[in-house]
Image (tube, rainbow, N blue to C red; front, side, top):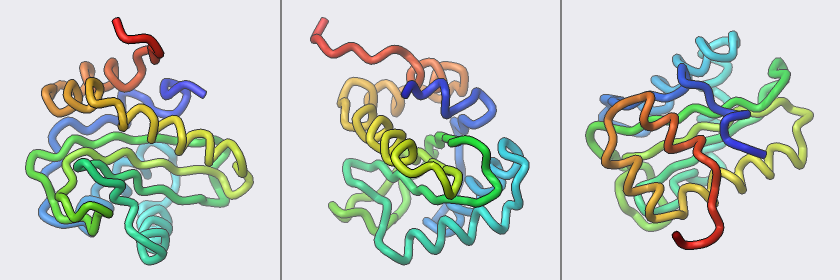
Length: 154
C-alpha cells in the first residue's frame, strides 16, 4: 500500500495553526469532511472516541489519529504540519508538530492496519521526518509523503 493511494494534495496542510489537541482534531475533521464528503461532526466524534481509548500521539512529535466510519468507501489520509507544537498526551510526553490522520471504512479490517503500519514506518524514518519539518510548502510535503520508500541507505 502506497501513501499516494491514501493522501491527496488537498489533504496536506502545511501551516496548521492550533493551540490544543481538540482544536487540531477539529481542524483536521473539517478538512477531512471536504476531502471525503462526510460530516465534519461524524469525523470529529469518531476521532474523539478513539482518543478516549488512548492517545494516538506515538512519540517523537508525531501523532496518527485514526478512526473508522461506515459511510466511507475507501481509506483516506490527511497530513498536517503544525506551526507550533501542541500537547497531545503522547507516549513520550513530547509535544506534537506532525499529524497524519487516517480514516477507514468500517469494513476495512486488515487494510486499515496495513495503512497504519505503512504510515508508522514512514514517520519512524528520521530523514523523512526531518524533511517534513523543514518544508512549509504543501506540494513539497505531498511529494515527501508519497516518494517511493527505499530500503537501502543511499
